[in-house]
Amino acid sequence: MRKLARVWEQGQHAIVSGDTGSGKTTLGRLLDQISIDKGGSVVLFVAKLSPDQTILDDYKGWTRWTEWKTNPGKGPHRILLWPDTSKAKGDDKLLVQREVFGHAFDELMDRGKWTVDIDEGLYMTSPQFMNMGKKIAMLHAMG
Image (cartoon, rainbow, N blue to C red; front, side):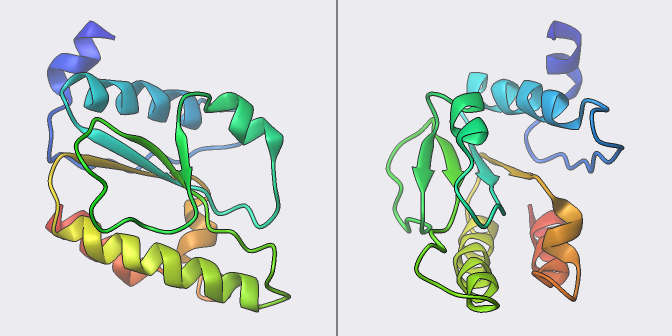
């Protein structure tokens, strides 16, 4: 991890893709820890529509936010941004996610020292689902 920490700097961008079980999440967690160690904060966008205990178990010590907090206070933070869609039905669940994630992307473009981790990137960018490709591309370019 020391070697990786020397080459990964704040402001750099990377997209990691691969098959299920190929180590994407593990690599993301290592990079998240490097950001925290350097005084940064991490937000993981959780796109699951229903409760998933394995995520909560895997990310013990992280705080779940159901909405983006405009003034999150001083870091470092480990945030699971996971909108509460339990009261919405059908396509309204996607609308809830789009609203919360869209607000977070807009706010993150104006902030520094945040590592953005998006699991299920294809779901987030796909026009038939979240359709957030433009916001993600803008965050990538402005980050």
